[in-house]
Image 1: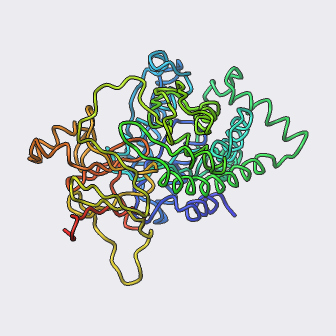
Image 2: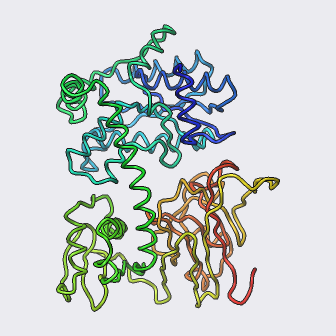
Image 3: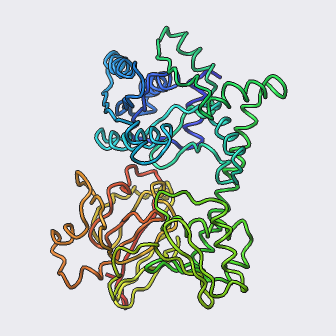
Length: 472
């Protein structure tokens, strides 16, 4: 099977690019990204992909970074592809955000790619990770003691980001470029063994290939795929458990008995998701999760512990998580409740019920795909853009979101004023938020742009609101 057929098989099996989806290619100038762009051009010419353009972020970390950017611009001009680029002072970002250079560069790169995709109207962002990248990531996570969530490593699809080359070897990509006589840029930093990933790439992987198995990359990638299957199942079960034992108010309330009696594979996931709501950028570790679960033990009554961005206290039959520094007292009529899928929540004070249910990726035979609008009592959101679980809550100080079709993010307060929502009603407007507390739907008013359904064949979550006592 030739290289193009292998890539097409991955795209089809993992459903990476729905029919009609526009794809943005991430282009660094390296061999993998150049091969990705050329393969997408071939798929475009065969009618399988609509290519929106290519995007390059100049990290300004090397003396030849400007030459990399110029190379990418020239390549796209030669291919007749739209090209967008930005520059970012990643070193300054790393210092300001107290991150490693690699982490700051990665965050800046993906933020830029999301902006570029918006600008070019792309619903998918293709990046050039290979099977070796998958194997290296699996090993790095294993060395750090990760569970199945971490060992799932690089996913074929995450939100808009897709990885069509995840089952292809770097050598195959370089052979493809050599056969076409296509140049590419070499990144000297890839040889720096002071970076952990490069030590795995240049020292550990060659040892494993020579002393254990020449096919170790594929074996490790298979391990990542198995971990991903297990993680998806356990995560779904954990969401069901959380819907029964977790209540979101001004913080998080967890039923102690429900948490302590659940299998550890589920209780640890519920605990981690609860902690991540208030932790901000501080990573939640294995130790944090274990300390929270220990607080659910009957012997821990009355105890309190400090955790990232919050404190946890055992009160009667519940474990309460509260922000370490609350910016403002919640309004007297504030509310927040979990929303399972499928499921619904009743808001008696508002006299409405908000419901969620999954819809199939393809409509039943004979039924035309629905066209989703921003307003109304029933909306559709892109399932792959949402971080579960969902919740329904009232507005909070500082809430911002990007209304459907708007050029950028807005203060929720300003949006409600523009929509002529009366001052006395604004605190009562329900908001559907995802697991990262991003506003998904201002109920009855607007879906957020990042959750817009971009293709009729993608998986959709149907959100509905109805008045108590009837429909409409």
